[in-house]
Length: 310
Ligand SMILES: Cc1ncc(C[n+]2csc(CCOP(=O)(O)OP(=O)(O)O)c2C)c(N)n1
Ligand code: SF4
Ligand SMILES: [Mg+2]
Image (tube, rainbow, N blue to C red; front, top):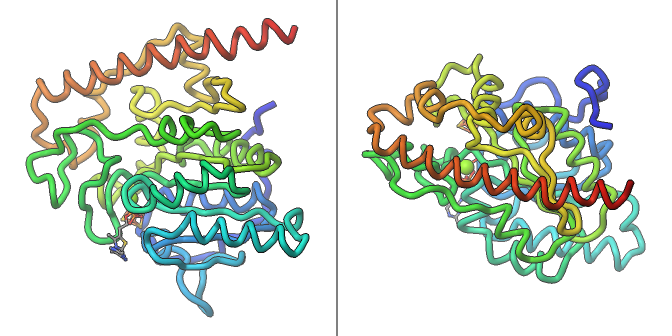
């Protein structure tokens, strides 16, 4: 059964106060991520907004072990930690969590991550996707959506984002999930599930960023939810190759699969200012095709696996 919001643990490994911007989606989610691992963990983190949020001893904002590593080596460092725990017979004592941004994952860190996935190394890799290189002032990444203005795409990015969870699934790893910081119980449940699986577990987390996306910090959760309701972000998991929609995306599918229009989502954020009707229609077509694929996959794999089980 999915965890209910009031059943989330009160224990917090994220301490009061940090240097992230007001309303940052990373801080909301990190609380659930560390709680789902009961704080029994060691993290590897590259240069990013997450490093800034974590801070440095003695004013760190988290109370779990955390290694700041060079930009491309988040997964390589996690592979080393997992090997070290195994060599000393301590692999059951804690979870290795590699956590990096979209730039540090899909662009700069992808070779170490792909190698670790091919070897099925024993750690969780969580990519928080704020859809650009935010820590250095909002440059475009492979995850930036089409139409978004960044300091390197002044007229709006032309390409749709790369599908990182699908790339990771192609490695044949035991667990792949897509979640959103706007759905704390979905984040918590997916990290808790990944904790009990061995091998490389990949979780992709959409993470609204008020500063880089240009919206009011009070709207972080509303915008994250709207991304799901508009189909730009889809909540799902793939366990041993079997796909299923989860949380709000599963509810949308159950209610007939109708999504809100992309134009409504685009209107909520300054990064999309001036986006043409043609560009919005192109993103809408991309969303519709992807959503139809997810619905078909959910029906074929999840629903049929339930029928087989019953
Ligand atoms: C090898 C290397 N290249 C570039 C940088 C500069 N740099 C630091 S943080 C950052 C942005 C990271 O973007 P992302 O991984 O998406 O995380 P975010 O900042 O968005 O949280 C960059 C380019 C660096 N520290 N090291
Ligand atoms: S720039 Fe965005 S991701 Fe980075 S700390 Fe600020 S709100 Fe968070
Ligand atoms: Mg980023």
